[in-house]
Image 1 (tube, rainbow, N blue to C red):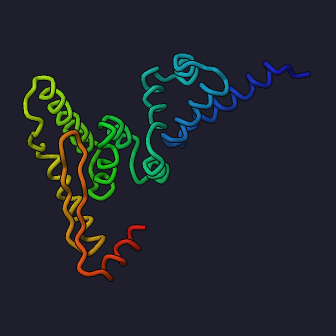
Image 2 (spheres, rainbow, N blue to C red):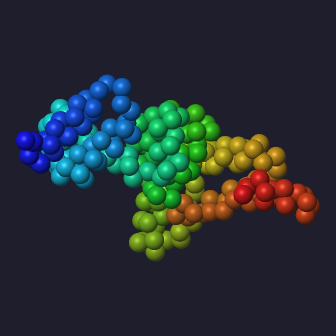
Image 3 (cartoon, rainbow, N blue to C red):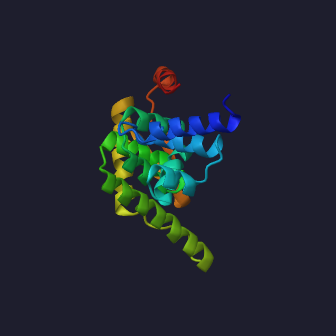
Length: 194
């Protein structure tokens, strides 16, 4: 007779063998590591020893599961790489989706995505520093961020066939302004967007 501990051990062994397959993508690995952690109570350190990876590798792979569903879908489909996903994780929360869209529409390399994430971080850090020092909060947008925003404007204009403007404000918030040319055009735009 197989004891419950033996069956759990067998499941863990089967899962670890699956993880060690070379054809798993980063998202599949993250889900498997998460299953080892959640269902079988294995710590990141234990998982790392079992699969022959560093604990930081396991932690960074698990972090991929923090991304939004559209980003996870793109990772699963191979539209972005695990390196791109990790660059998106580096970005401040309010910039993650912007960076993701830029990677998809602009074909950024992983290094370019990392630089863009760092530019977003630097912008927010500068704003926070100025707030603490009581200086005016308005700051210049970093060149990389401004370039990304201009490319996003062009992509929206092409996709929607109309003028578009992205007003980027302090702290990473902003607004997108779309032109319409008459009431019928407004209705078409709303239908396209919904």
